[in-house]
Length: 175
Image (cartoon, rainbow, N blue to C red; front, side, top):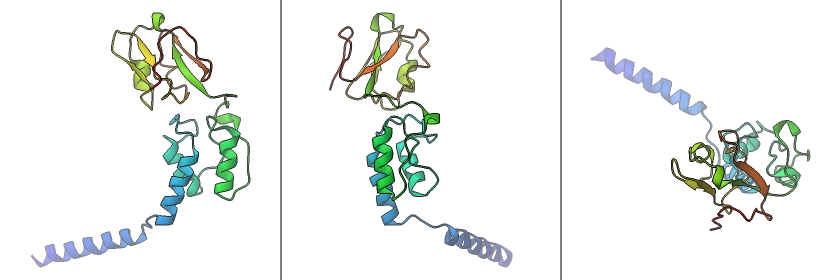
């Protein structure tokens, strides 16, 4: 019984020591992460090498990433991030992808769509609707232009178009 009590006490001391070393984020740091996240385009594309915009914002605040890793946000976002974090501005690094000159959205050539649902599974913002073996369509107002739906499409029926000049063929759900 005494041995069990001593082992429990030793475990409690070790756990307390580990928790004491873990430095929780301050409220100020959490607010800064939210502010930086609000500056990002919320494409959740992963081009920055993080799993989404919030993890990238966290890495920026913690000093683990630079401000020029977001092609969808472009140079304007890189500049805003640099200003908010009091860092030197750097244009978007091409190794993370090309910055589109205008906002783009995905467009599905509906007659060519075979209804495989691979694009739906790839879309990080649920901007594609449809059912298995039925055509799919893009909710243009929700699409962030991240391009993640294009590679898994087996029939190559998805294209990116400028958000302001969507093709007139096909069905677009705008809200």
